[in-house]
Length: 509
Image 1 (cartoon, helix red, strand yellow):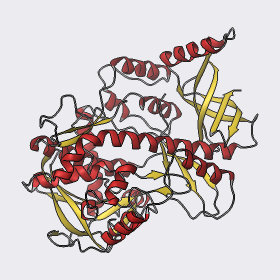
Image 2 (cartoon, one colour; image 1 turned 90 degrees about the vertical axis):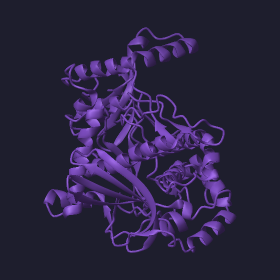
Image 3 (tube, helix red, strand yellow; image 1 turned 60 degrees about the vertical axis):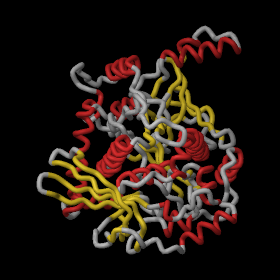
Image 4 (tube, helix red, strand yellow; image 1 turned 45 degrees about the vertical axis):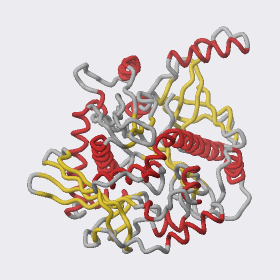
């Protein structure tokens, strides 16, 4: 079954108090061997790097009024954007934090970030990829400060198609740190200004081009963990804002441009995702029928998604089911040390429906630093650094290992918070909506496993497992019952809520 779509909000100050949730979260980190702090030699190296003068040898773009758009409270700002209308099209400038200016290849800091792989987000604390002196200060694109950046210049035609792209090292100065909510409010009120109006205009064009390619963007409601100032935690379901999708399109078009440069230069690392299995598509069509969603045969998957509204419980259930359509994301390097320069076959990203590379989040994701360095070298007609080529063959394994750990950690953290919110309420009945039901293959595997353990009860084959969303508190958890009605409101009874076991479980009432 698909994993839930979740986000851990920026951490508020946590009071120094003994709390079952904090204890369980600390135990989780110890169990998963998540480091509590950086080694002293790494901190020393990062602190020294933060004092470096990184302004020389860069294009001076401090007069370009870049802005950052992130969740409120974010300090690790990877990207800043500026948009401009051109005759017959647009110019997208995308400034990306230049981590290579601070990380010495082969040093203690380089070794540590290669071990960590990516930033981990927990309800009570964040485990950053880089020390805060870099990720929240010297390397972060904070406003009103000169910052080293790799600046992408991507030209689009009037339809939003990429016509040219390059990247260069530059010195930038962001003028504002904006939140998604703030930008959306200003856009809705009509007083956002020309640059942010262009974000909507370009975002809508790119979404249309995505649908034409056969790509998809899922507007699945997020389950947010919120840390309160009194040390307690809460959960909220939040529909993503349109501006989040438009901002994501700027990142996606940059990744598509990066992949083109890599392919042309014969060295790079693509983010890949295999196409959906036709059998899964047919299963999803049956799900649409069961939910009363009209899906004509001549309407593509992406075109259907554009008509859905996650505020509808049936549409939200379908969107949650749709997350299971694409599985198996990975990385495909080429042109690295000991590797052929030929681009591998079948390296497109199926959800984006294009070749794509990660280059826009180097503060929080290791592979982006290498991808950025490749594109910088190729655009400057220089050799790709040896330290980059040497690292390429091992990056997929590193990112798979650390990505799996990040996903497991964030899901288990939410499980802990959910269980805490429901502690003492076993036996209570809640209003819920069924958003996911196991498919036939999953049911057969479970039945076979149960048969090997013990004789099934007479009606065991009628019992189905799935996922329900509880509105208050905002919990998504497992449920078991006969004939779970996908997309329908139901009444469910809580039968387990264990902080220690990180488990919440319901049954149909």
